[in-house]
Structure formats: structure tokens, C-alpha cells
Image 1 (cartoon, one colour):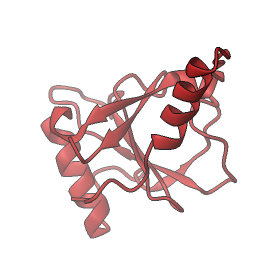
Image 2 (cartoon, one colour):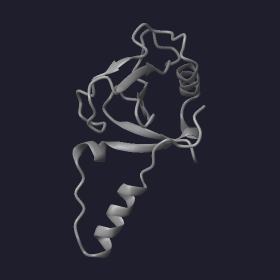
Image 3 (tube, helix red, strand yellow):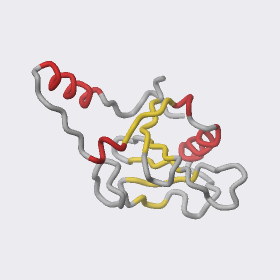
Image 4 (cartoon, helix red, strand yellow):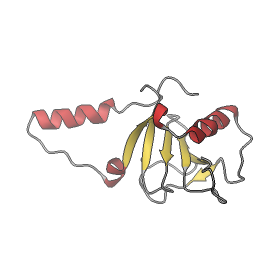
Length: 128
């Protein structure tokens, strides 16, 4: 398990509040609009297993686990190649890897969850 949360969204929230207080406008980039937040306690139980395996360094159930995530969709914040890595969150009853993943970022060690195969992401909040 990773405690405490390793990145914060306070800066973004402060910018929005500041813009609203002074009568400005707030514009979101497509990436920022697509990344939400999810409480650690709201993740499916299989995601806990995946996060534990990541923390332990494996072994992982699929050969693709731990490979570089390219962020081709452009939803996550733009980073250099090799920054993000993806891991499978097992979907019970699925004969394939399914659509659920954890994507980790190296420098800030942030963890994202997607239940829809990279259509959207939620930053995992370990503090709620």
C-alpha cells in the first residue's frame, strides 16, 4: 500500500478558486477534464491485489504488466516516454486481460485507475 498520497491536486483547486473569486474564467485542457479522482477504498478488490504486486515488484499475472504505457490517448499529463507503466487489474470471469488497469507514474509515483481501457482515468486518492 502507498501512504500518504503521493501527489496533490491543491494547486489546480487553488487556481480554479482564484479564477472564480476574481471573475475570471476557467478553461480545462482535454487531459485535465478526463482525469478524475477515486478514493482508494472505492477501488475494486482486485485493484488492491495489483497495487500490492506493484509495491512488491511482482510477479505479475500477465507478460504485459510493467510495460511502458505510451499515453497515446493524451489523457494523462504529458510526460517523456517511459514515465508511465501499466498493470492489469484482473476482471473476474473474463477470459482476457479485460479493460481494467493501474497506470503508474515514476517521478511523482502517482497511480491512476481505468476501468474502461484508457477512455478515462482516476487518480487514486489514498487519503480518503
